[in-house]
Length: 245
Image (cartoon, rainbow, N blue to C red):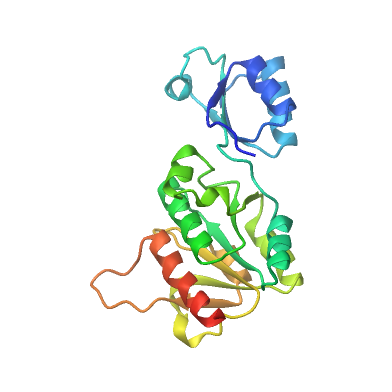
């Protein structure tokens, strides 16, 4: 099901959005405001494991379209998130070993959209992103994905490392991208696999990297030492595709 992307403003509107089950990516609350209605809203947000950001009035005014936010602004996702189990089921239905993308610290919506597009074209069964320090499924992501978001499930999880552990128990193994790793051509990338991509600047976080079975590097011949995250995802994904043929 598709949702319209929009901001939800005002205490009653935000509270009803949570109670009606709308997918809320982030909640922005006026810092220091702890009256009854705000406490009720933040309690609902925690029930849904929504990220809460406490910000200044100036920041809320910037985020608000109506300028009548009453101390609270919520951002709804443009698309509904899937569950990780949906991706495994999709692989099973296709009779294929699972192939998943896991994105760590990808905060640029253009990068996220481009990676979802690559995931679809490479035959991946889904993309997993963390709730914190990650772009959500905004209209920009949808547009950049060139329609792939309609076909490729995206799950949002609280703890990426914990999900990797759970998927390992189900037979997947994981490779992350890092320039200090083993050349991707020297790794066996067949079978049930999760490809972990980090941000261009910080790469894959230490805790997530420690959960990976292999670290793959992309050979580079130029004068700079890193690729854009979406480009790196494409290069590694198609090495996986090549080996899975």
